[in-house]
Amino acid sequence: MVLLVTAPNALAGSVSTLNTPNFNITITTNCKEGEVACNDVSYKGISKKTSKAITLKGKTLHTLCKDGSPCRFLGYEFVAGITTYRVLEDGSLTVTQNGRSLIQERGEWR
Image 1 (spheres, rainbow, N blue to C red):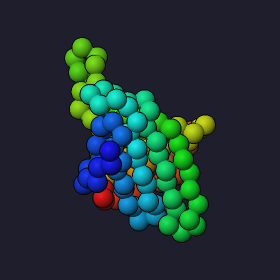
Image 2: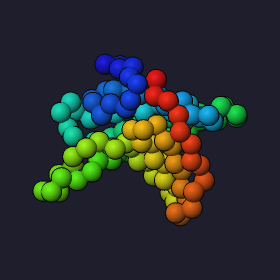
Image 3: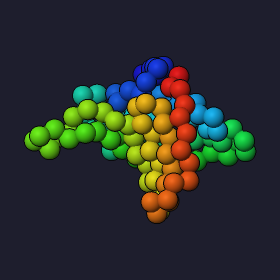
């Protein structure tokens, strides 16, 4: 099932696309429908300047409820070695390396 949405969807098989000033990012959630937290999310980012692509595996991010279970959906996190990519529900993309910010930009969900 492919969903075209204006905000990210944490549903099984859902696909969301974020367009930022420098990147086109496709997020695919590969977990069973009904799972709140998902540790099987794919990221494909394509640079608008160089057309180079990167594919990563990651997870959803959530606030925690009082009992420690996942509550409100926040976005996605992908880790590649010492580099962390975060794509949030509000359309922001942050890339950090060893805690140092490399990229911070905001886009629109399509």
